[in-house]
Length: 177
Image 1: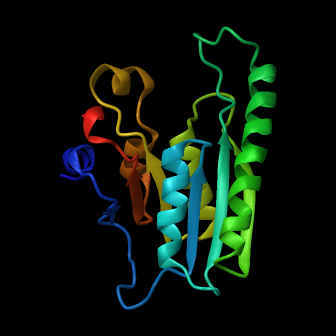
Image 2: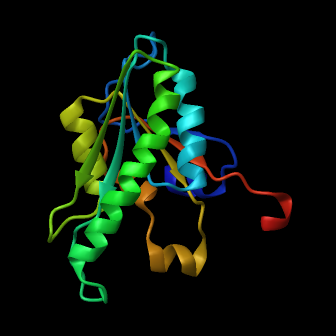
């Protein structure tokens, strides 16, 4: 049910997995933000802090995708270096905003394994090991062939996580649809 709804929704969508145990009587005490330098990621950051107080633990991560694929044309070490640089920039850009909301902010570069891993699994592992009560991430809202070719990290996280997930869609102008 959540996948078709997530594709069509124009507002942020909270996915609460059946196996999660959120407390509806309080705001989450530990919120993990998955950043990727994209406008939807920044929109998610700005939207997700609405659920935080100055005492909420906020943790921003950037996943360095080190998984080797047969289609990789660039040496993996060169890609990894570029991802580290991009991730460091993304976290440095997001950290001051998070610090303006909470006194308890941390950031981390998270790496996928070289084989048999992907960004979605790395996000879910990071959320579980950090004991997140909410994951917040942007989604590009890609459709059809683009989505098939690029995949959907947000969709995979929604399928894998036991932690509630707040998906914030990219803002679209009327002419984009």
